[in-house]
Image (cartoon, rainbow, N blue to C red; front, side, top):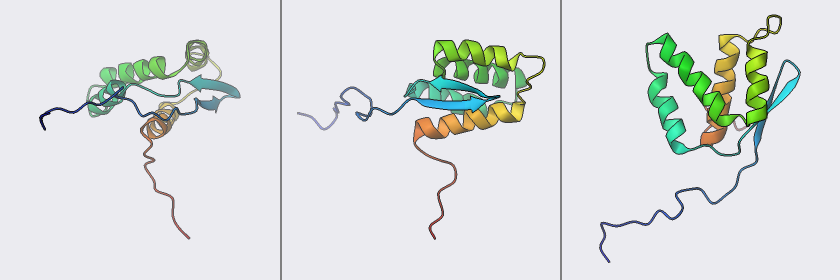
Length: 113
């Protein structure tokens, strides 16, 4: 066998993660337990775009990929509700939290007392 070959098995971490969920305007939204690596790489590469339209499309695409279908429908309706405002900052906070959870790498490390 040559050293220029490596079998990556299934290509997935064998540990199955718990589904993710978050609450916004008193509604709970459920996300899939794991996300494709390509989705994360696309998010990272497109996040540096200076084009606001591309960034907005990226966020919409990300939520469509990570929210389970029923939650995605309700989330979209909430984000278009005339009285329940969801700010850009809130969308960014949710996206950041989900990315941290999916990557297993929180941005801020816990402090040790």
